[in-house]
Every structure is written in C-alpha cells, then in structure tokens.
Amino acid sequence: MARSMGFLTSTIQVRARYRRCQAAWQPHLTRTRTAILAAAKLAPGRRKALLFGAGLLHDIPLRELAASFEEVLLADIVHSVPSRLAARRFPNVRLLTLDVTGIMRELPRLRDSPGIPLPASAPDAFLKDCRLDFTVSVNLLSQLSWVPGRFLGALRPEADLAIFQRGLVLAHLEYLGQLPGHTALITDVRWCARPLAPGAKGAREWEVLQGVRLPEPDWAWDWEIAPAPEREPGVDYMAKVHGYADWKKAGGGADWTGKPEAQGG
Ligand SMILES: C[S@@+](CC[C@H](N)C(=O)[O-])C[C@H]1O[C@@H](n2cnc3c(N)ncnc32)[C@H](O)[C@@H]1O
Image 1: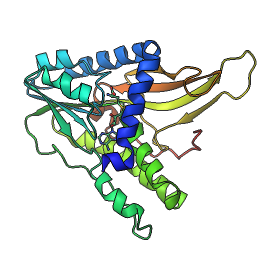
Image 2 (image 1 turned 30 degrees about the vertical axis):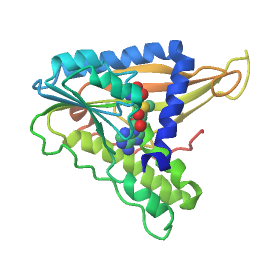
Image 3 (image 1 turned 90 degrees about the vertical axis):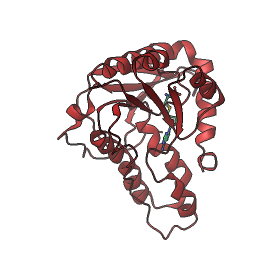
Image 4 (image 1 turned 120 degrees about the horizontal axis):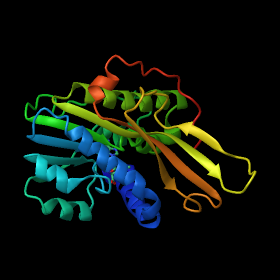
C-alpha cells in the first residue's frame, strides 16, 4: 500500500535530497534533535518513547533516547534499510510500520470508486498503552496530507479533497492530545520561495497545514529545505518550523480553525 501510494518514492527522494543538501539541513536537524531531547525531559517516566515520522532518522537523537528510555519505538509508514540497520544497534529500539492516520490502507480502493466518500481519520493506536511516557511527532504533520493528496489528485472534487486533507492534520493534532504520557510536536508550518537575484520578483510564502493554524510555538526556526538550484535555479526554498515541547498544554483549547489559504505549490 505504502509503495503504491508513493510513500517509498518520497522516502527515496528525501534521502537523495538529504545527500545533496546535507550542509544546509544541518541547523534544522540539530534544532529538531535538541527539541526532541528537551521535550523528552518533561516525560513523567522513562518506560516507552514513541516517535512518529522517524523515517530516515536524520533528525532523531537515537543514541540519547535509547539511553534514557527502556523502550524506543520508531514509527513510520515505511522504513529504509539504513534505518533498520541503525535501529539494530540498540537492543531496546524497535521499528514499527504504522500508518498514523489509520486510513491510508483504504485509499487505493477508494481511488477507483470516486462515488464513495473519503473516510475520516480517527487513529487509536497506543491510546490505551499505559507504559507510554513520551510521544513526539517529528516533521510529519505536513506530509500526512501531501502524499494522499497527490495520490487522489484530480480523481476527487477539489473541495472534498481539501476537507479530507485538513481532516488528516486535525486528527493527528487531536490524537497527540489524547495519547497517554507526555506529547510533543515538531512540524513545518509554512514554506517560502526567495529568488536570489537582487530586485528579482516572485518571492512568495504559503502555509502547508491545510489552513490549520497552530498556536504560538516554544521554538521556531527556518529549514533551508531546498537551496537553489535544488528545486529551482536561482530560488531558495525555506520551510518555517515550529516546535511544541508540551503539545497537550500548547494545543489544549486552541482554535485551529484558520481558514484554508491558497497553496503556493
Ligand atoms: C519529512 S519525513 C520526517 C523526517 C524524518 N524524521 C527523517 O529523518 O527522514 C516525514 C516522514 O513521515 C512519514 N509519513 C508520512 N505519512 C505517514 C503516515 N500516514 N504514517 C506514518 N508515517 C508517515 C514518511 O514516510 C516520512 O518518513
């Protein structure tokens, strides 16, 4: 399922981009690792740590987490061979192949049946796990809607797709608020394109969370995600990243109903 929907291709593309943009990505990767460790300190216990979007582990402080928790679960919809090998070095680290939305499996069937409404995401994994002390969602939130959006594409009316994609983002945020233990969130919220030539026009900025507006973050930084010419000659692409050390506190009672705005691409 993950392969047919394009998740594996995405992972391979991220790995290739990481190789090309490694130096530009370093500050973001360091900020993410630091934020994860700071948030982990707030956990009520040291039993189980769960990471959503562990992916290629570029931004995961695996050694430190393995040393401070009894069990570390690296959850992702696809796992690469290097991640499997990295996890094997720690006896208390386990990879978990998990779709955090709980509904991706249904999409290939629904793609061929445009008359059937798209499902609502209501993840329930780990909700009753009383050993879970710490969960962090790592640079995953914007991705949740992106791959299914590309997969379903023109086969669904634009308005239906927008509601579905927005629902995936909201469901993940609500889910993080319901999990046992301490939860933290790190996510890109906006992207911007900056032409490099002096006086050049065409600078633009757009949000990537389907109109969902997050509260004030504990940490914010820029991720130089695709410096020129990675995505476009003469244009730098930057992601704005927000980090929440305590998502239940930050997100509890917040209004995430910001109106969707046009996507810039
Ligand atoms: C931008 S990457 C996060 C960075 C990652 N920690 C790394 O170092 O490569 C986003 C990750 O989210 C995963 N992902 C996307 N949709 C998912 C889903 N529905 N369930 C679980 N993981 C998902 C992707 O496979 C990818 O590994």
